[in-house]
Image 1 (cartoon, helix red, strand yellow):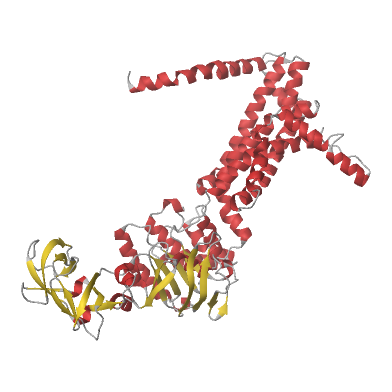
Image 2: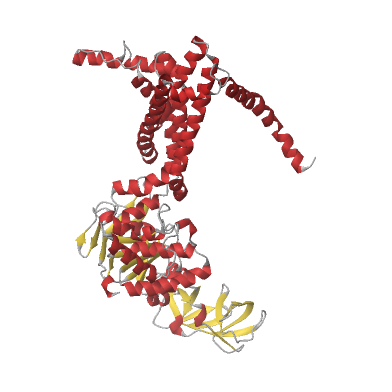
Length: 352
Length: 271
């Protein structure tokens, strides 16, 4: 599989996109993607992530001034068919008039690869993507998961320098999505191609991404590794979009947050009179009533299996989400104490 | 009234109309075709009599040529019109589909204005080449008329089909390295195949049976509908004209069925 390690590095230099009707889909953005890296563009719909992917693919031209570079070479004006990229579409876009094998081999056929060599490469990919036995099926005879595999096999058959995936798992049901996600992860690591992956699903982004670019309203909200994005979100949007988060806005005094249920020490030095902080539900610990820095009453208990989610009121102005161990005996109406380690508090810049 | 008898009751008008205006006249026509001096052999005459056979071949060739050229012109135009927005686009579409309402007579009239003895092309060629180019009254004039007649019908179907094309299929083909021609050949045309069959069938059947244009241009163009007309009204040869009519219907149906089964696999795959 080492023969497949032929990724290129990508640089997007000041690429914005304004459509003909004046809509600004993407603010000028600059981004470097290392050879072999998997970069995830994460954001809600309409945030510009697909536009950025299409600019890298060559399906959209960036506004004047923007440049796309592959391995340092300017490819801005090179059409998609000569960029040597592999692309997986959300709808898979498999050719209905061709068999599975013909779909996978199409890019090689266009490149004039001899029949025998083509067949060998198709067989290799069929095995790699676990679709053995489906080679001669028509596309409408495949299930969603099988189509996804064929689309991926077709995209990597041409040994692309970059693999671009546009929400490749969104069309599948949840259980299948989880399974294919880890399968996809294994495959991407094995192939070692530079990969750019667009999704609105933060779980996908966390598992697949070496780095995540969180996008919002045509701009980049934060770039970082999954851990950085999760533990050190730069603003409220990122904190709330990635994972579950309690956002607490409260006055400060002597380095402590003053909350209805008690005082919460904040790490570091802050002199501001007010603060907005993020607390992940799993970083709050449930203790005996009276113990801990906060007191509250359980509103609801949702047993999820591996843990239970409590909604606690009275501790903060808004109810707090708390993830407790699944062994704790808790029911609605119980008075409890809460402790939050100072390092679990993340102060966010106050904003709009 | 039970559900079943209600359905039958609703179908009654259809049964009456079909029987009265389709089955009975058709049956009478088939019988009349065999009532000539040669009996059932009158039908064979369509194929054995040289004049009839030549006319038949002529008609089929003309209809086939019309269908093919119409499809080519309408596909290119339809694709362009559906995919591009430019000033005057709606006017152009209106103009292209305007002839939908014209009867064959008007189409024939327009062909004469264009390529007749006093026509535009004649005038132009006279001035440029010193020779008057007149082809309105021949099979070429008829061909042009049929094109004019068929293009609006086909172009609307093609435009609707182009609108339904999945653009990501074309983008996928391009991402795999396919240039514009390869994308057309491997993705767009296969996806449009059902529309080609449907609208091509209409163009072909119309060209096989059209009469008004031929009648307007000349009375001696060798196409089947004209032959039926002359046999019927001028020669009062009811048996032959009935046999020719049935033959015209059968042959058209047969060719369309062949075309459909031939392209069937492609259509099924693209569907």
